[in-house]
Length: 522
Image (cartoon, rainbow, N blue to C red; front, side, top):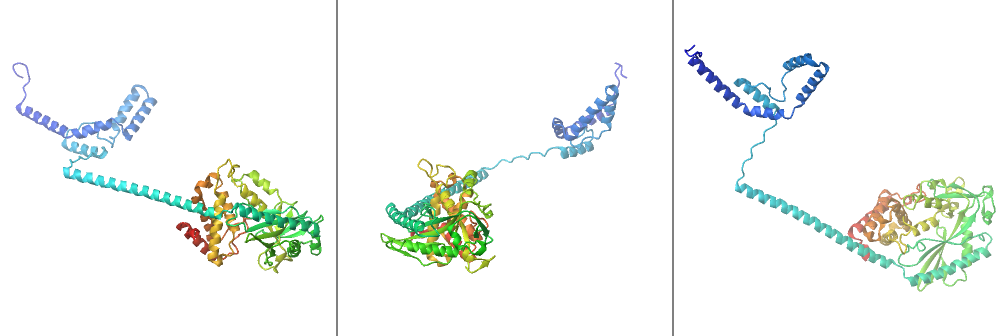
């Protein structure tokens, strides 16, 4: 000790202490970055730290007081440091600093890379690239707008062309009234003759007007009319003659009818061929004295007696069709899955139709001498729902006011007229399409109306897209060679058309559709 009472310190010791202090300072300084990261991460506890804190809390809750605090202290001492951050103890050696720095690097978030200042040349290049990209985007947008405008212009032009075609298909009122006048007189003459001068057809009911003319679907000229003369039969047994449910053999059950004269033996079968032959004779007798009328030769399997008459230098064809009206019988079971108009015209309307009588016409397919269960094909009857079709097409809107004076117009009938016109023109160019008829077009429309059942989907202003879609529907039926009868789904209306002709017709219709219907301009 010195004289003043202070302990003496050796210079060597002071030097070592100073060197140690400086070394520690350097070590601490070198690890300042790691320490700052550790502190920053301590602000947001890691998953391991959160779990440790939770365990500590649970320990304190289980063992309160001094014992719990002592146990907690021992647990913390034994617990290994979290790998998510560096240990809390400050490093004192270079090796420890290096170890902690590596641990810190593993647990720390990646550093943000320093951003190098861009040169003026690089900035100019980036501006040019941005302008190029913006220019390409603007050009692409402009091209898209131009395409949309061109597409809209094509649609307007096509719609204009279709409406012009419809104008040419309209029947002039003067021609219509003159034709109707002549047809009505012939109808009256035949009806009067059947009621008063025949033995077997005197119970004939009021004629039923069917076909495109009376459905307001006739195009170009009023040159074809269809009139059915119904003969009521009280109670009959009908048995399917074919697998598709379209043709039937008919036998009388009980009750009187003049047609009983034609029944075959004990089976009470009504032979369609004999009844049609007798009916034809009576029709010929009735119009003998009517001026300017001649009769077509009988066609195989045709149920009609076809009359021809001249009206103002125009030839008019009138089909007189005999039919049986089944008044006391429900519709055949084959119709169960047909007439799917619930979503279009409502279930109420469907139920109403189901309670109306159905008709049977003397028509057959194939060879008349073909026999099934003792019945010849020529003596079979085909079921008909012409009266229901007519009512549906004349009341076709999902809204009651559709196409009425105060309601919105739709384009359903216009689309069908255009399809019928297109089909007739293609048939004129290729005679191999003679088996396709307007009834195929009508059935396609009926199915389409059930698929697109809202009036808004057939707006008059959308004639072009609606017609385009109807043609696609028809093409699809032709491609698959399948078009189900609207009332009897088991019957395929295209079954008697060849696959080749169906494919060819579908291809021609597609070409016309894609090219804007050049055939309408011929």
